[in-house]
Structure formats: C-alpha cells, structure tokens
Length: 192
Image 1 (cartoon, rainbow, N blue to C red):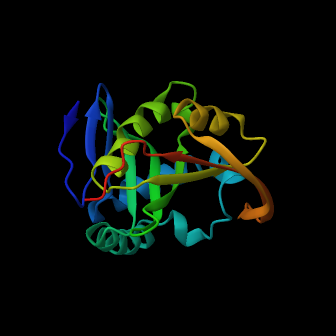
Image 2 (cartoon, helix red, strand yellow):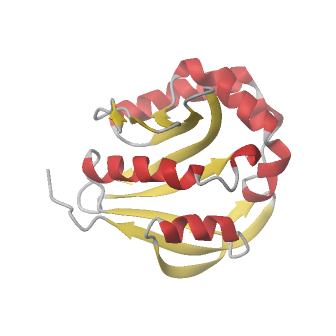
Image 3 (cartoon, rainbow, N blue to C red):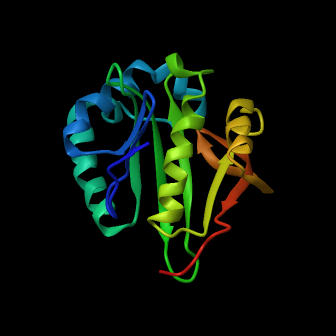
C-alpha cells in the first residue's frame, strides 16, 4: 500500500483505489460528482439546496474543510479510481472529540457507477486505520437507515457492531428517518 499520509492528511492507495483528504482545488471534481449522482444519492442524504451542486459553493466549503483538517477536527476524504482519476465517493470523519472520548462519526457516499464492486470496503479499509493509528481515535460511530442493506453490509464487513436504534434520528431527504447505531472500537488504542 502506498501511504503518503500525515497528521493532517490522509493519502493512501491500494490497487486502483486512492483515498485522500480533499483540497480546495477539488471543487470542480466534487461538484461534478454530486451533480452526476444527484438522483441516486437523494434518498440517502439530507435535502440539498441548489448551491450544494455548484463549484463556487464547494470552493468555499473546501477552504473551511482544509482548516478543519489542519486543526484535527474533521476529515473530508475523496475516493478515486486511481487508473482513471474519476471520483467514486466520499468518506467523512466528523465531530472529532479528543480526550477523554477519542471518538468521531463516520459518513460516506458512493457513486452509482461504483456500486457492488467492493469500492467502499476497500476505501474504508484504508481510511479507518488512519483514524485509529494516526488520529488516535478509540471509537468510530456510524449509523444507517434500517432499509439501507448495502450500508449495513459494508459496516458489518468492516467490523462495526450494533449499539442501538434511534427513532427519527436524521433528517434525510426532507423526512425524519430512524437509524441503526453502530460503532467500531480500536482494540489497540494507546494514548499518544
């Protein structure tokens, strides 16, 4: 595995999958990804306004995200097919809390064209160790809607364990949706 990661940047490649933190120069690529997958992702994400799909909007967001990366408060990562340089999805680690919790939340999306190929599992197998080994997280929480069987399968394959069920947990596509709550714990956690 090629690993060019640092304390403020995730950058790992294995085979034809590259996972790296976003940069301000990614505004066009990200806007295009969400434009191309708008209808496919709509049932699984919050309702988006038109600005969400614009390059200028992403340019502003990415400057703020880069600052969050530097501060160690969040990591917004992109998944690429390394052979074609086409963006395949996103992985986000948000709500990072250090001592004494050492925890964060995981979110992700995957292009319709990348479904069913093991892309998200490969990408998470690179991103999760970064959060445990470099960012020293003890716990990574993730949730999914009960009818999202693909998300359930990905999280189960990655070792996430069910911790509970939350009614009306997140506002998804304009409707409050129940979610299954899961978490992955770092069995080798040590304080830095």
